[in-house]
Image 1: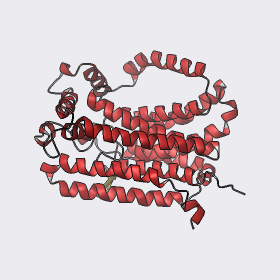
Image 2 (image 1 turned 90 degrees about the vertical axis):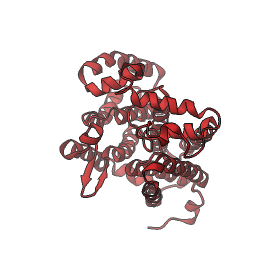
Image 3 (image 1 turned 30 degrees about the horizontal axis):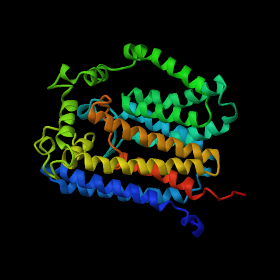
Length: 368
């Protein structure tokens, strides 16, 4: 396989640079967050994950994304089999309270991270095939059922945060496909009435506790509300310019849990303050705007839907993580894209970026 020179020239290097800058901020903050834990091994792992991510991007760029449309059903089946394997052989309940990981020897990964990428591709194909009848109830039902199977498998693990991510990018893709506002309104009403049913039927006790402590962390300040309280203290301590790298009291003295993964934003806010937070958020905004522009410039609807799904997925993780750390959303255990420590999460986000770059690179290419 060979990339044509004219395609290489169309790679959006400015988007890559923005993401690389975010990754560098992540490496710096991980070094600070794990300073007392022997940060060298964390930094080596994170840098290795980033390098593997860029290798994945290069591999994805070699594949014309339209080829993926022809393989959407095998991709869909494989993605769901990954999720079924978690229910059968999953691990992690002892450490994280839910079996979300697959362990093979000394290696472990979270299949739902990769399933997100596969389902985005499959949904883009299904929506593209039915875009002319997107307003029909039968079409919407088919699409929602198509997305509903992997969502149900993830909810069964249970993993509320990833289930919400699936719902977010699914509705986003349908909306971009031209769903009428009245249908969105009806869906919202149904969702509101479904909340009590979900509370009584689907949510586990610990998930209910997370929502209750999100509404009032002081209900259990030394237990289930501890994460939220310590995170807000860290964010508030940062003020304008922060306490300085390696000088955060909440992070360096061990008060802030999961400080290099789920609550890395809290470390950044405490040590670099509002100034550092503003830089990171600005980089995220630039990244998302570039992704939106790529979706608008895509040469076909299938490509536009892929980019839309990947962008909604990244946006959800950014908003949910930052919202979680400052008390605007319940603690869902979702890391911060390109910043938090973690191999499979970094790799899946890089794969999403690869798909976006793939669509952009072939925006003017005509297939014969």
